[in-house]
Length: 59
Image 1 (cartoon, rainbow, N blue to C red):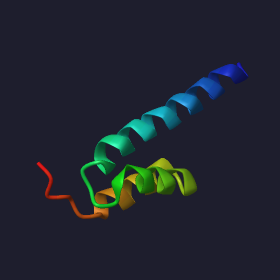
Image 2: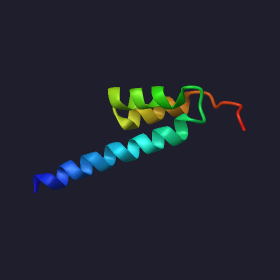
Image 3: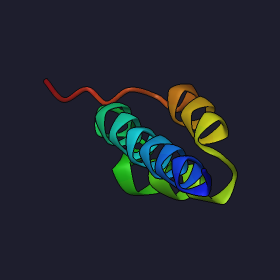
Image 4: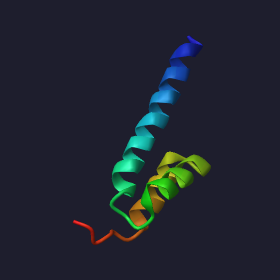
């Protein structure tokens, strides 16, 4: 029964990293800092910080 929680937590962390990579790569904050904030606080707070940063002009 406890293994289910471990699998859920691991999947949550992996999904959060993939989302941070996708969104952070297109923002000034970048992938590394978005992952840093996601790990430091929580993926939800890291997502909010990443969304609040400016988008890059790369196309």
